[in-house]
Length: 441
Image (tube, rainbow, N blue to C red; front, side):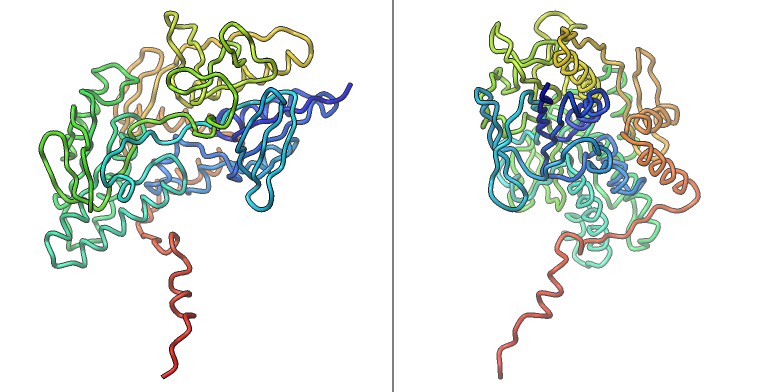
């Protein structure tokens, strides 16, 4: 029997976990697993706020693909087109000409990208919070703004530098806002020129509540805790413009800000537009509870999907509901999907994915948090401890678990690093200026 070829498109939560499980459960005689992703690592996104705040090293929040997927073939590149009728994918390597890869089964898991709106100035002045690069940039940028504010004598420049705007009150926005404010407040001990009251942290949320994944009382508690830290919480408010750094809100307020972070939701990767898979109104791939792609009543043989880019029916809820785009669902779907692919290859029937959402945990800064797990609600230190414990247990590989625990342990006895490394974002600038040919006199 010729081994089946399984192509995994994307190495996020779904792609990495699925490929890892497939490579463990299938022998080389049964299948060959190929993983295609332009990045050499998987980013464990729940750790982005802590990495940005300096609680853990940014490198420890990512998982190297080649180290973890030693029994898989890893291709560094992007899938630019999938023709499932021919069972062929076109891959653009990071360098060189395109290549075609044929397959027997394909796991379509390119994930999601930031869902933006056509807001004037957002493209020029906004920054997302989905990648490790964005997390590192935001940390350096916030610390750099403290340096700017401490050095200037212009009150308008200082006010703009110390105004930080976060758009979106979901988990990404709340955690990013809370962790960055906690870090900046901690850094102010080294800035005698500045006071905590000089900083302005603004959360803009279009709905009337934050953290929609938890009960309203837990969302209200979160808002109360942020207000106690003198944050400016704008609910039922939209960002209408940020041209030239001037933030204009739907409630009529207007002010300048050097920092505008967009965390207002996600949408399926645009890579799906270059495929022939069926999609629903939100542009996600339509799937059965078995994670098989379905076109109407017809199962698309050999095609599988899960995670943010897939519309997977949630069997724990009324008909018509779909699984939420969370890391919790993505990891569990990846395991079920891998097991189902193994079953199909070995001539067995696939099994439905059914998992009730266990709950959610969120960090609100060092030693502060909110959690709702299996109906049990916690706040403060216990919630923060549960947040850390849960995500430490979920990040792949023993290597990363140990490194994260070591980072946390050192943070208890050593002060947090609060220096900006802004040159990381343009490292050749100084050399380019020094090596520029000078005009002869």
